[in-house]
Image 1 (cartoon, one colour):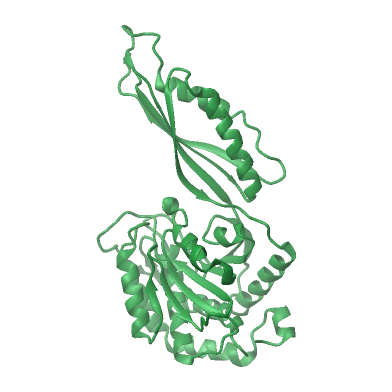
Image 2 (cartoon, one colour):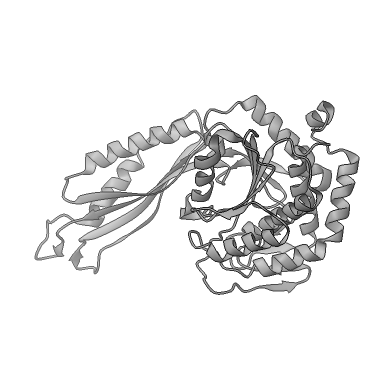
Length: 391
């Protein structure tokens, strides 16, 4: 491993840095071609099969010997993972927010590549894969076992299922976790957790005049919403809540038989999330059997921060930022976020989510990335991984 001085500063030794720069320069066209190919493959959450199979087969062609697609549709490439070794995970998610199952549109103009999901998270996934190629060719000596993972189900109601599966299988051995996600100017070191629900109310309904007085599902939900908005969230950590959608009924002259709403609360503290859960359940109990039948469906859980060693977390992030800034000259903002890192952070395991590309308009069909930023981002990805190689 690097000497203690370098580890404290988070600075790569000069020869390794020059090796990274030379390798990236020699393979930049291959990197772009891979992005153009992968960026057309559709991958809605829970339907990442096409991308997963492509990634597995590509890794096998690069000489990977231990590659598998697990039951959660994660593609896992193992490097130096002897049983006794602790593990470092480097991951980038395969899914994008769009439901397309046909090849995705793509265009290039003025040095930019445009496609749905091209930055979030296809470019980051390409930089992870190209880093795997480097490791497989150089057969780097590693201080830990590496799991290089193209994980499923990061977006929306994918509910981080891919990363949850990784920790259910390898949890006791995982020392640290990195997610390549987002843009180069961002680093996430804090998990914003969320609980998401759909609440549905059903009543007998009827005619607005002839059956006047019968319970109205919309009115019942409105009273529920009003009481939910009287909840005082915990004050020790920023905690929020929101009703984001409400729908139901049929016509203006009908007493609504059914209505539903979407509700969530968020916090970076798992303890605060659990307190909000208790308060939410109390409000629901208060409104049960008051003219309608309420049913509650849990749509998704993303945990917040668990019992972290904050001094170790600060040093971990500081070291990673110093590696990023070996190659990226812009400012990197450290902030809380909702990413695959939520899972390790909730378990007290060191984790950062960092971007490896410059781009914009994420989660729109007009998302773009700067093609020239790909090489910089790949150097960042390789630099972070090679912290764990003997130098």
